[in-house]
Image 1 (cartoon, rainbow, N blue to C red):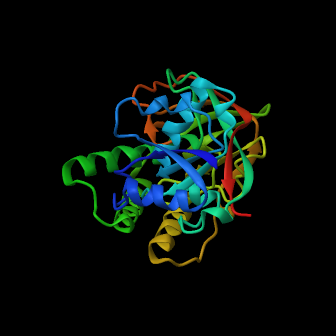
Image 2 (image 1 turned 90 degrees about the horizontal axis):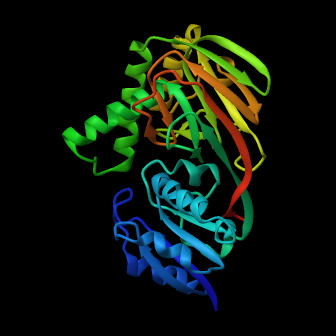
Length: 302
């Protein structure tokens, strides 16, 4: 029988999923399961085991925690195929991998897809990302939503949380000042005043916002995306369309994008994030990023 490790975040998303149900589903697909809850101290000891597959039941934050532990340990477990069972709110990684937010047919997910990592210098202890790194409006959104959750608690419905995030993002776009940036992308210099600059490994950011439609997780490059100050009204209109579930304006009409492998950033502002974490002590330091190709393997649809 195939051996698997199950990493489970029992509080991800709505929290309406339990150990017994998940283990039963995985065993029905022909696996012997070793279970680890991220709520239990010492869950990181999963790396001492060997497995044919690592199942991860949780959201994007849980994938980031898993990635951090695998990078610490390295080969061979770092290359063990990871199968995401998306149970979070946004599930941007799973959506990029076209997992369709379903865990009903585990045996149909057989293809292995490489997954790149961004190696980061200049951001303190935050030495890597799996989703993206950026400046401007999205780290501001993280700050607003963290405060909202602290004051009001978690919304019961994940869709309500996503809509709230889009509403807050619209207000941030309307009221934020653009910042100067100097970007050296594979040797090309890009300068200007921007509302946002993002280096994306996946297609989605924040509240299921598809900022980088051309991003591929395993192609050895990232998608550099920037919205200049002059495109503020276009970005407002685009977010309003998302809220109405309409489509009258397209990102490619006003967003700068470019495939890159190595990037240096100098952002003349204070708002920076790596994945879903704000860098609260960013003071304009130069940030260097390089693509580490195929750091992980993920299982996707056949």
